Image: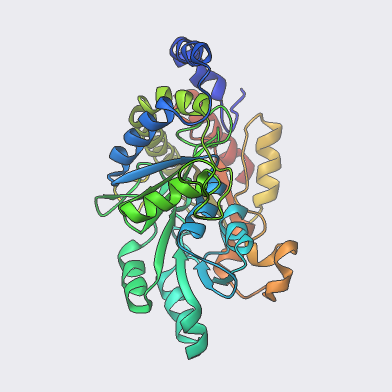
Length: 377
């Protein structure tokens, strides 16, 4: 049996007619950059995230970068984030010239630990504290970080909060949607996301009219009106083709999220039946609305051997992320070393993502779990 990590072809077949009809209409209009499709999507995403405004941009990475630019982050500033994340989180900070201050993760949720943040900040001198400007919590794998504590820290140190919600559209923290908790929220529509485009795309949400204006201006080279440049921006515009595709998929997002959650519940039943608790740690569902962009298990030992065994059995997996950001070669200038963030390093060495996409059959779920059982027995 084949169980790919993700099967977008199955999803496409269910909406193919709607997609082709929408794209035909768009091609006939020849309106490819911004325009009505983008504006409609922005309104839908803002409402869905319960935010005042949404700005469509060219990718999740550019969502982070343009948010930092809108926040005025520059050379000499300090931004706090996690080393256990996708490169874009840290790369975007580095591109502004700001210094990255890492805080370790919670070992159960893999999200940035408020206690680790407090410990890091307490160790700074007054001049370093004066340089603190923002914090980027990452809502990893579809579950929100501990935002109440992070909000308290942000108030104490007067920090902006930019949520990296690339994997968390529709996730909630104590009933509040990701992207509406901090000052800005950054989303990715990369094809593998719960809400994916047919290429790159992103969105920034905010409740601030001033920030929304800056974001809209910055994404179009900083011009307002055209050819009159108030700010130094970039080409961060979301194209209409991607907006049209995302808008069709958006109608099914909650249905697909519910299917992911059902698959997770079935995984939990199957793992309990196979009595693998001693070897495998399943994801901790700390919040009521975890959207499971990934289903990530932690293994006490033999992670890489298990992955190879599953691959040979036709089961797709992925390691998110094998090298934490503080140990990446391009960030060597930050002078972090192995052992600085033990929880992030442990997660990098012991976690494995299993298939969880909505179209999985019960037979496929059973096959994944029984194959893992075979490996350990």
